[in-house]
Image 1 (cartoon, rainbow, N blue to C red):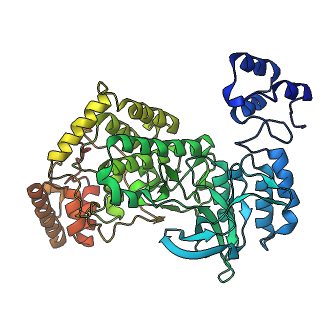
Image 2: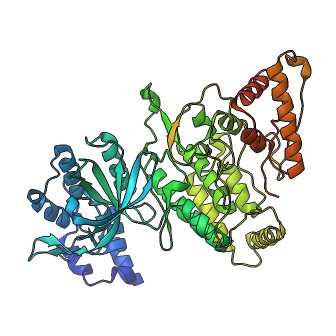
Length: 527
């Protein structure tokens, strides 16, 4: 199929127009002359290429012109791997903007390499890229046959574990980055290879750190407008992923990075099309960070875009309260069971009710009741734009929340340096790992969706084997935990999981499985 282009006659009539500042007469003429909607939109958004005079495919980017420059340069580089070479070449020829035009980068281009972090699937380093990346407004240097570049750029080197041989998963993550290329997704510049380890490495845009790290250091200084602005960034990125028909699959606070003014989504390694069912592979395993994984997924159901929305709900609550979800309890089978039974993160930190209502919708046990990413973005956008209006409900609720949080002695604690102060349980894990739980109950919401935390105690001793010493010891231990929780105003679940032995927890789980309710009435906390 031949490419649709503007005729010379049309180009002659519009070549001197300022596409970003069209008069009504000029816009009317454009609508009359350019009948192809794609060409018309490209022109109105980006203008005409200075060489071929056809509408740019991206900001200052002409696919027809630039693909020729890339193709002419194919003979000047190789990764040493046919699959990698072919992947990069296809990406360069198909690119409609510089974010999609990845490169092969020789490893000796990097200096001052420093370790940054270790995640569930790989290790990240910081490095200085001497030549730097192709800028969004780069021009081809005809004299030297190369691109203009932003030299000496700091980048992140993401090395997946045990990747001496290139894998489909490695290339799939880069492809996902290309498909979701946007302002809210961390950019992938290209691929390199460590000659010592033979590991292939992704060269990524470097940001300041994860959202979790930023909350630890700066939560106290964030106001509700800043929080809404950043939540809006996250929804924009998630909407891009879902609009492309993809699912993130590993959406948690560690996979959101902080820039100078914005937040970015990263780690698209598990990202895949929404119409691909993992059940097609009977040995498919579930990976993730337990507190952010939707209850239906914990039970073995398919990941869906609604599962990502659940993760956003947990992230949003964490962002509003400052503390990681379930930071004070082990991330184990018992917590997974309680999540399926309706347990959600709790805090004494007050959240504006309009925002809290959105969070509750996101973590609903029924995936069909969770909002879509675009709906989520619209809802938060309304709150963000209304919060400066003194007459708006969100402004009044934010002021009320601030007053309550200032007076409360039970809200987020900070150290003398202004950082958050909390102790994470040694078995609370916030990097992605294999999740394999058996016999979890059907997901449900809390029995009473009230705005205060409550627990009930109902023990039917006629159903218990009180001749079993182990059962009696477990029940007594639980009662002690319950009384202690009442005394200090804490969660019975947190106390039990933090104090009871594994065998006692196992017995209590078996008791509940037999229909004996001991502590299952949990509701959502927003004082």
